[in-house]
Length: 264
Image 1 (tube, one colour):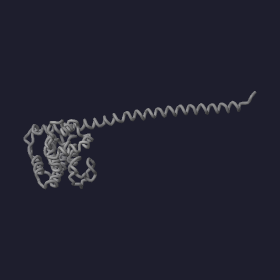
Image 2 (cartoon, helix red, strand yellow):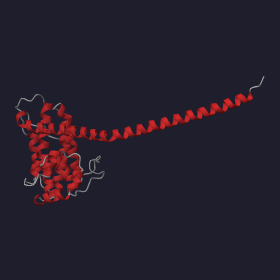
Image 3 (cartoon, one colour):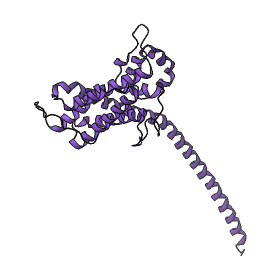
Image 4 (spheres, helix red, strand yellow):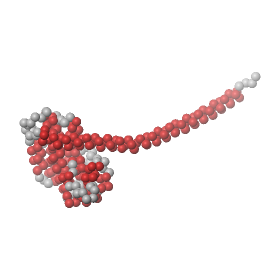
C-alpha cells in the first residue's frame, strides 16, 4: 500500500502513542494473524483429518525443538482427552504445523531463512508474518513502538495477510478486519490480554533459546573435557619423549666430550 490512513484519535488515556502502537500490533497478531493461520491450516488439512495428520507426523514434530512440553501435550493428549482443534492452537504451534505438515512449498530461500522482497509465495508471506511477530515480541520489554516502526511493521503484515487471502480464497474478509482494527479506537483495558499474550510468547522464546543453549553446552562440555584430557595426554607424552631425547643427546655429547679430553 502506498500510504496508510492514521488511526482515529483515541479518547482513552494511553501512556503515550508508542504504547498504543504496540498494543494495536499485539492485537493484530493475536487475533487476525492467528485466525489467518488457523484458516491456512484448515485449508490444507481439513479439520476432520487433523488428528490423522498429527499422528502420521508425530516423529517429525517430536524433533521440532520450538514446541514446548505443554504444546506437545495439547497436540498429543492422553487417551480419553479430546483431540485439539485449530481454534485451540496458538500462533507458534500453528506456524510449526503449517511449516511441517501442510505440504506448502517453501519460499525461494527455504522456511525460516531470509525472504526475498520479490517473493510473494504463500510460504514467504507466512514467514514474513512470523518474522514481524518476533520483532513485535522483542518490543515487549518496553511495551512501546515508535510511529515509523509501527507503520513499517503494519504495512508488512497487512500486505502479507492480503496476499495470502488472495491466493487461498480470493476473498477480502481479513483485509477488512485489518483495516477496521487499524482505524478503531482502543483502550489499554481492551488490549491488555493481547499484550500479555505477546509478552508471554517473548518470555517463552527466551526460555526455549536458553534451554537450547544449555542443551548444547551439556553436550559440548564432555567433549571439551575429553579433548582437554587428550591434549594433556599428548602434552605429557611429548614432554616425556623430549626429556628422553634430551637425556640421550646429553649422554652422547658427554661421551664425545670425555673422549676428546686429553689425558695427563
